[in-house]
Amino acid sequence: MYALPGQSVADLEDDVRTALSFKPPHLSIYHLTVEPNILFAKYPPRLPDDDTAWDMLDRITALTQEAGLARYEVSAYAKNAHRCTHNINYWQFGDYIGIGAGAHGKLSFAHRVMRQVRYRDPKQYMDHALAGHAVAQEHEVSNKDLTFEFMLNALRLKDGFLVRDFCTRTGQPVTAITPGLKAAEAKGLIKTNLVHIQPTERGLDFLSDLQGLFLPA
Image (tube, rainbow, N blue to C red; front, side, top):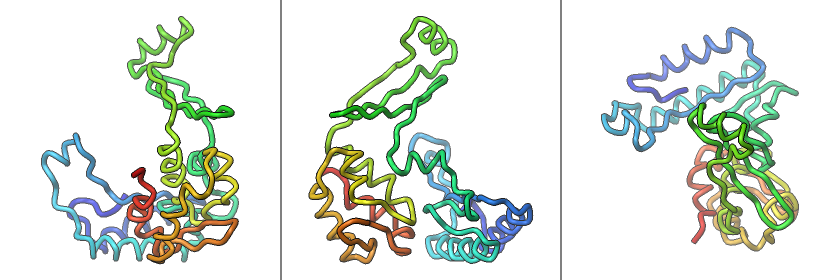
């Protein structure tokens, strides 16, 4: 994690070089985000300014490249054949079953996509699981939310996605994202043709802005 309270670019370089000294085939590096309802939100620490955070990202990119790790996702770098298959399934909007207390799951059917949440308390989870109903919450994802959720995940990948995969996994026509695609292309955040959509380097660096173009109206 980088852009930490009190962290300098030199501190960041030391952290990355230390991590790379172990010669990992994969490295995930996340920009610290202060979320609501946490201690940092109530008592905000002094974080590096935006310009310093950008300098840090530039150094991360350069140092990982020197170590033979390619950026394949907005926060993930890997050597050949070492991309995280588990996470790629999420980013490509694949299905998964949640097993365990508090686990989330996503299941696709012919005409709907369901999201499920298991009971968070371990004892409650075990009691309900043994009784045959461990799911605490379940809801069908609306068409508008399906479109946004797909784009929220798929645009994290440097290689982007195929238009046919968007249509297959959301059940929506490509026209559902055409306005956002046009706006993103005009801003230089994506490159696209009739079959493939891919974020540019600028698009990855300004991923939140890119994803925001596909928010439901």
